[in-house]
Length: 95
Image (cartoon, rainbow, N blue to C red; front, side, top):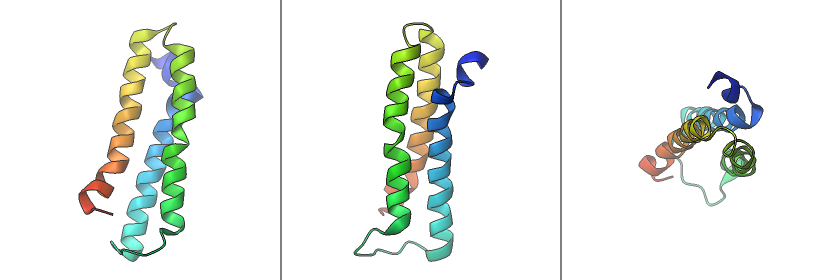
């Protein structure tokens, strides 16, 4: 497991989700849950961070699933969990 999690395509999506969480909570701390007509820079950065993970995750899956299926599925579950954590406040706060 240690070998595969050290691959950039394994940990970068998790780091991007964590960066999106930090961005979200920083925005909420500074501005609160304000509904604007325009989404703003923070929303666009959040979308870029979350959407940018998809090609990296796809590459990771194609490269490592045939070689190490069990470890790959564990890392994919971690990536999914990190993304779900990033989207949870948006769903809960109805942003």
